[in-house]
Amino acid sequence: DGGITQSPKYLFRKEGQNVTLSCEQNLNHDAMYWYRQDPGQGLRLIYYSQIVNDFQKGDIAEGYSVSREKKESFPLTVTSAQKNPTAFYLCASSKGSWSGHNEQFFGPGTRLTVL
Amino acid sequence: AQSVTQLDSQVPVFEEAPVELRCNYSSSVSVYLFWYVQYPNQGLQLLLKYLSGSTLVKGINGFEAEFNKSQTSFHLRKPSVHISDTAEYFCAGLNTGTASKLTFGTGTRLQVTL
Image (tube, rainbow over all chains, first blue to last red; front, side, top):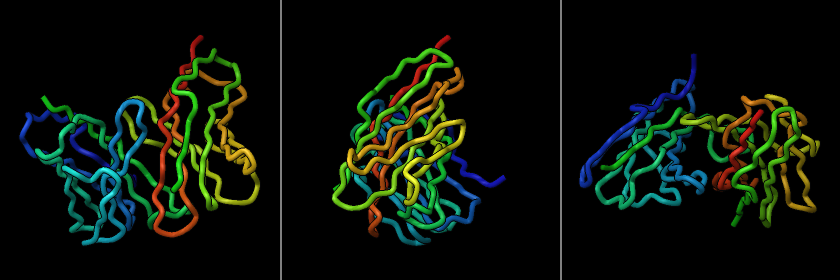
């Protein structure tokens, strides 16, 4: 079955540590996205990539980094510079970017907790 | 800039009753509009979308929404809800121009009880 996988489902991190969240898709989509979800705030865009080896900052990129070396993979690193990293992180992908005809498909999410 | 507002953070409703979840948008340009559903600890699933044409859009699970340009609204409705409809619902908008990002509302928690 085609889809998006995110791992791990739950992640615990000590303050001051970097951590990398995995996102893999087998939908052959060009565009991939990372969102952060906090209670009562909806989804906020962290980074997005329209094509391999290219990515752009979203609305809340500070303290995060990404890479897009392969079409199917878009890992997100939460660095120690992110002041409030505890949140639910969602990865998404679409055929192309930012078009009403390109539906975004979402992964199941990773819940990150900083201890 | 575009914004999407969901006026109700929570909507309690009894099973088999009708429900309306409200969404308003503000944009100086044409928009595409979407409703997504999120079940606990899961990702988002597209319910329906409005791109153009008929203002009444039908989606999955018996949901529908009506695009109202004069009132800048895109309210989601279901004539009879089920316990399994309990979830978080997000309205989202996208300007039809290029290089525009998908903007999400803050979500409405639909709680269906017996």
